[in-house]
Length: 573
Image (tube, rainbow, N blue to C red):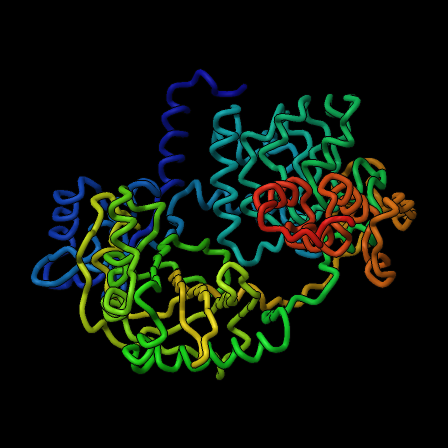
């Protein structure tokens, strides 16, 4: 391999890699000092160097060495400098001034075909410009440069990629190219032909990662000669339809499996009576929660319980409208997040019992505004009967806007290791939040009482139940880019619609004809196995499969964990 033992070349590669890994940070409220004073101050306080700082308007924009340093520097957000509180933001921007970045970006666009939406990364190690710069000359540099290239690709909105060609790259495994799944999770066609991949295990990092991959080409790899090759590839890629130019699944039936047999609805009520009662309760409750929480306390008895849990985990940037910089300063002292609390005593202290204790936590939370009536589509509610207390349970998901700061702040019982983030405890901005709330209600002669009330507060994200229309992919459309990969015979197969015979069901598994007609053979087979193994009747077997996402292992574990609560009539009589 060229340049492997060339010390000067290795030094150059190290410098290029360092430049590629740099992360952009933006600093404001520094104007009372100079740039040199600012960088020196941050270096002394954080032991982190901010380099190549430039001024744009009121912002000082510079770079730190890597993501880890960026996260560490962000902990000093709010530190006082020259009479002001610095505001430090990690933008994650790429240092476009780096020659390596410019080279890799030019390579990406040179290899991209916008008409077919194909990125041709075949024979990377033979590219003249990359070889001249000493990139992709060893396995080590290939892995590092590929990761850098994928980072660049993910930031380029003009790179709309549906097909990738990685043929002729001497790949023995996918360890150096695993980031492909993060950059292009919706990839439809992938070519890995003419490499040296020999083991199924080497492909497992991609298991269930490419949710829309329909075509895979692995010809001229040792792995294709293995006896279980086809089955293993189908396990790794759940929506694969064509493997090495051969149809391996029925596309229409495969789509039927992944399309829920009923329309997804944000509101579900076990019966009409519960629907009416729960809707009225939630509407009135939230109105008082937003205006005068003290009036709600009459719903809670001395035995009633309330707990609030703050989940400050930052949602992925790929999630629509996700809040990437959430504020939880008003919540952490009262939060009963048992994954963060270190002792049983603290867990017990965070559980409020009776109106007095509940009122204390109510008053420690920001005042809010819900939009249940104005923006009903942004909320999801389910109501089911709850036999343990002869009552019912309401589960509500949605969002609220914080309007004013709390009446008082609860600082009691703060666990020592309650760590939700770098600056979460000191950040007390009012903002929009997502939430989940679960009430257990018990009817009385005078209305209802709240036996249990659990509130979870999360960073804001848009409602997951609002589906964006998606045009189903077809083989004719997705196969076109693969024909451009210079691989023999990679063409769509016209026998895609060949039928699979349905399995023979147990006599006791009786499904309504309209339901059975909409289920694929694979779903019917799963239902049949669940029915035989659990001895549940048809209705409960279908309910179990549906709630588990048609995953047998998940369904059977759920059955085992709730056997004590399943009524006798749920079983085969």
